[in-house]
Image 1 (tube, helix red, strand yellow):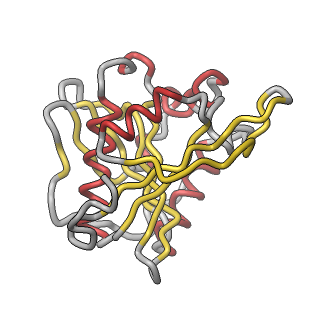
Image 2 (cartoon, one colour; image 1 turned 135 degrees about the vertical axis):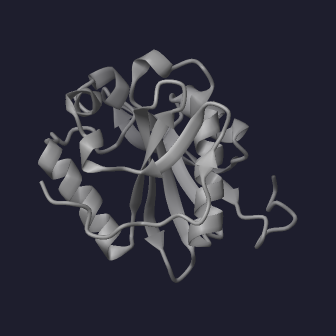
Amino acid sequence: METFPHTLQLRHAYESENLLLRPLQPTDLDEHFLSWFQDEDLMRFYTNSRQQHTRESLWQNISQGAAAGTSHTFAIVERAVGQCIGTIKLGPINHDHRISDLVVLIGDRRFHGRGLAVEAIRLGNALAFEEFDIRKLFGGMFETNQSSYKAYTRAGWVEEGRLKGHYLVDGQPVDRLLVACFNPRYFPEGAGQ
C-alpha cells in the first residue's frame, strides 16, 4: 500500500470533549475498519454502498482525492480509547465556489447512540470553514434516515429542500432531504439558520 501522497498539516487541533479529528492514515484501515463497509445495515443509507472495497481500493480512492485536492478524509478518534471509530469525508470540494459535501460515518457500532455524530459534524464544520475556507457545506440523505437528519440539524445544519422520490428503496420512491451549513464569515445572518 502506498504512503500518503502528501502530508496535510492542519493549522488547528479539531477536538471536542469526546473526539478529535486527524487525517486518516493507512494504518487506520484495519479489518475492523473494513468491516464497516461490509455491514449492510450500516451502509443501507449510503448511495455508493453497493461497491465492494478492499484496503487497497479504499486507500487509493482516499489518496487520489487528497492528491488532487478535491477530497480529504479524516479519522474520527474517540479520545478515551484513542481509536478510530469513524470517518469524515470533506468533498468533493468545488474550489471555484468554495462549497463541499461533508459525509460523516460513525462506523464502530459500539459508539452509536451517544451523540458523537453531532460532535463529529460540528468538528467537521469548523475544519471545513477554518482550514479550507469553505463558504457552504451541503449534503443530502434519505428521508427515512432520520438519525442522520437529526445529527446534522443538531450540529447547525438547516434543511434547504427536498427532492421528491429521488431514491428507490425496495422498489418504493424515497425523498432526498437537502441540508446545508453556512460559514458565518460569508453568511453573517446565518442564511436562514
